[in-house]
Length: 438
Image (cartoon, rainbow, N blue to C red; front, side, top):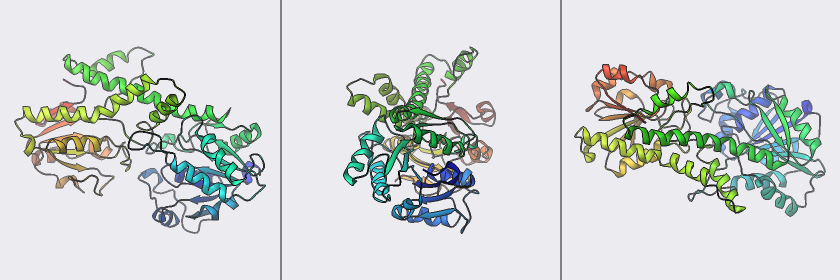
């Protein structure tokens, strides 16, 4: 391998993770080759435009013709130029909640088929997987193609930890861990990634250690969120507001505060636990706690839909005539990413009850789900009976609630994120409700 500061870096997949990673290495002075199979993505990046929904990327895409910046749809064109190739493709789950590794396998095959022989190109998987996937998926491909580890290629794993919409935890400011069977290659990758991020970069030994570290980071968050979501169902039945309980408990030094919500979305927390559950099943070990937590969080939108139905009934709004406005659709604040959003199952559950559903999201304006009316501006939303805050976009929190109140048929609001000033809204004439509140 070339010295870290002289290497050419390839990025396979220019999505929410891959594009900021490519930009980060380019900003650090590296020659970069970025690859994506989407013609639209490649055309936009070449034009200096941001194809992702992360506003933090809007103004940092290199301008057309920028030196050291090469973008293509062809893996075969890019890989021969690269000393290190990073694979940042999606790892979703199938309709039956099983790990879908087709992107990892396809990207690996495309890279390995494009490698010049004898160069010992380092290929690093950054996508989230369960322990063992990198070796189990890629080593058979090397055997099939007649490639020799340590001669033609060395595989490694360095999980991405990029947090879209969070400028404090971008690719240049998060710690990284590296797994690789070759300790020298591991050390060279530490040197490489240390030029990308200002935080700690650590070689942790086996591939499986790094793979497991990534997946349990999000499993742990899913468990913690599931606890408060379950409490948000229990305490209202006891006449107690869950937020009052959490605030009281947080006075103890070692209590970690989480907030309940309408559900968990995105490409990590609702997905990664299934990778761990599958791996546990493969080795015959039950993952009861992880499975139960996933069940709680997955069912939260259905629970909230039931609460909304009851509120409409109490307000004497017939379900067949009811109109509910979802404020926010993307899975997290300030990001236009609808993947695994809890808004979708919430809307589906309401539609099944005969409720008419509209949505306003300042970061999304395309059709989102059959039967859902998309309002491009909030001022077009008229005649609704209940507003549900689904995503805590700044624009949602700072919306003209007084004007919206005047256009409501029944002025009710349900805070699905516990971030609204409900006392102020009540003073302005809204009937206010919230997840976890009696």
